[in-house]
Length: 199
Image (cartoon, rainbow, N blue to C red; front, side, top):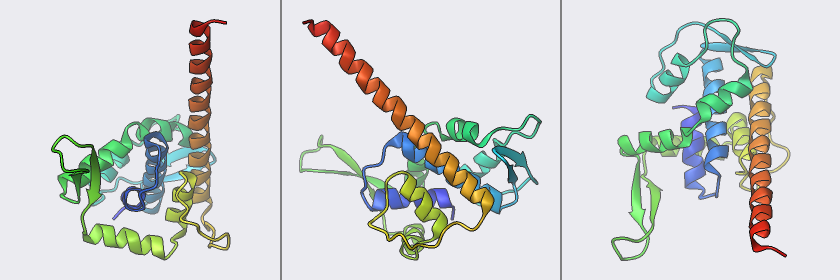
């Protein structure tokens, strides 16, 4: 079980509207945190320092571990989030579908109605729900970054690991940067539309 998979399941389960880009960045951060825990890497300031070779019982986590830059200069956390995070939420969705943990449900009675993804009742889903119910600090912090807070209180336990705190802060900064890009695009598109409309 990985933090990234748990985060993806929680995002689907609680039916919060989370942007795919935001979620992908948070998933990349969750993978990084699990790789720190597994000893595959360490954090030095804003950089990722490779650790020992590890094999994890998860295809996507093995891919993440294989993607660690092992030659100096090592990768910065921010660069990892953007590189590894590209379309990562789609990769997690595909993995859950392949494992039979997620299936498409049509809304409405017509065969061509809109499709939504439905989580099946699996041990993985129950474990993620238990972690969420227990307010596990890492999962709660990453979920909060992407806007899933489920009306949680401010007196939750904080993160007690400096490396994990650094990664969560980097995810927060990347999500904010993505939002700034979105807003800039919206303003530019509106200005362009006004230009075409004329006075």
